[in-house]
Each structure stands twice: as C-alpha cells, then as structure tokens.
Length: 95
Image 1: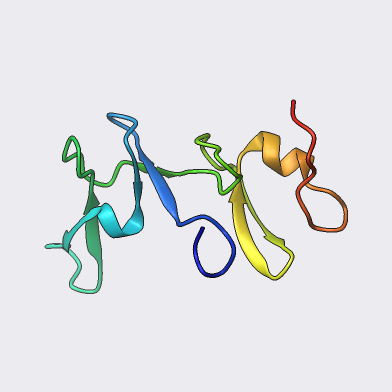
Image 2: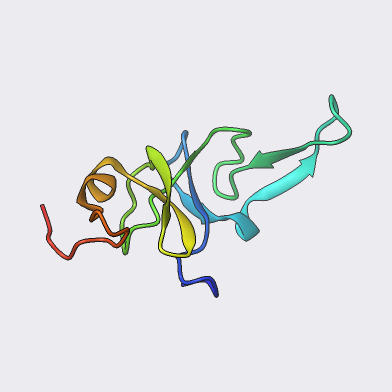
C-alpha cells in the first residue's frame, strides 16, 4: 500500500499483460511533443499501450471508473465499483 492508504498506481500492458507500477514503466521524452513523455512496457517494450489496473485489494482487473473513496481517489473495476457502499467504503462481500 502507498502512503495515502491505497495501492500504488498500477498499469497493465495491452500487449503482454504485464502489470507494472508507475515507477517501473520505461519513460522517454516524446519526440513529437517536448512537454510530454512516452511510456513503454519494461517486459515487451510496447509503447503507449497501457490500461489502468483496479485499486481494489489484490485485484488485477482493468479499472472502469475513478471515484472518491473516503479521503482518497481510487480507480476501480466494475466489480469493486458496484460493491462500493453508499458511505464510500468498500464492502467485504465477494462475488
């Protein structure tokens, strides 16, 4: 878990399905935009083909929604987004 109480930002490569945290993703200046950078997969070297992974505990599904949860903001998959209680906390039920 990161210091803010949620898991580290994780991304899944669309080519090889490797899941990486932001710090492990390869980065290089974008030759077409000096104010941007390109991201590459550290496993297969595919460029700019990432999907955000759910911040739910132990979940490796692709996130479909971002929402405030308590005092943080989380990206959640369909299952975890639907399990979210009205009070902004994750339920403990499993599907």
